[in-house]
Length: 233
Image (cartoon, rainbow, N blue to C red):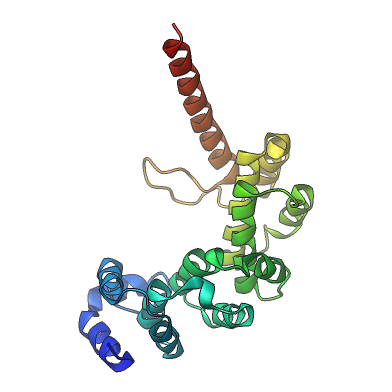
């Protein structure tokens, strides 16, 4: 399919009610995301098409571009430019989660974005740092990260604050030696303490989040231990 054909199909798939819901979250498109994923599955991976769709500037087209691209095909500067262009929340989130995280340039970008004066760009740096806190903490200065969170999170813009809070919670969940300080920072700053949370969901308030995830980890470990004991008797 050509770009024109894809854009025509996206226009047909757009629904005013879906757009109304998306606009409440800052996203200006009306294509149902399940439908968008089905279209991406039909198109399969097409890097050239993905780059052309991105250049349209259309939000639905950019989301589709993310789904049909080859993450490792982008150069570092290309990804940096794309992130700065991705001002819509869903495009920003998908670009970081589905493309940058799989890129060989992710660590270089993480370091650069973490110190960027643009809070939206910096939030991507914090999101990538949160990944490393959980999966590859070697080389990270967790104390310095907590220092930065303690000093900056309370007054940070929403998107950046959310990303820093996630990193705070992840440090507390994954690293017992830093857990009490992470909880203390969360309690003193009170960020997202009153955030509305649906029944059955975990609050994003860091002290509650940390406590719940640690409790779940303990339950899993206890269950595994009991199974191991049963297997030997």
